[in-house]
Length: 176
Image (cartoon, rainbow, N blue to C red):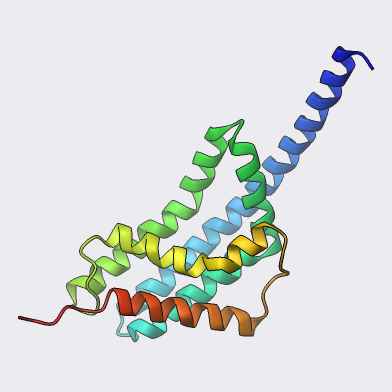
């Protein structure tokens, strides 16, 4: 096979991968936008007097389920793979979903800090920590294709641990 033909086959394959990535990206992009709206709604309900632990648990459950779905995992895999060649795709994906979720979470944590429910003087960093706890090992194992979508029991266990660790790390400081 000559070099020109081999390059043409590689280019065609790359285009098919990019087309699939774009299709999944935009399909899941809408889903991520919807998920951000659910997260914002969940966090807004906390301002109406819901228990902090309960709110974080509901938020975590929604986030873990969304991030662990087959379509989300495929999207993260495609974006990660393509980011090497096309960093702009990863930036657009991050801005369309994850950063919106972090911003909404940071605002919620800023309010919880102001109310003395947690000690999070840097709510943006605390939001990143919280979301990283929710991702945990499960997300990595899903990304590597080592686990199927989690059962409800697994989601509940992962979320409970993440919320416990977060609340312990960001417990209000004693006065004095």
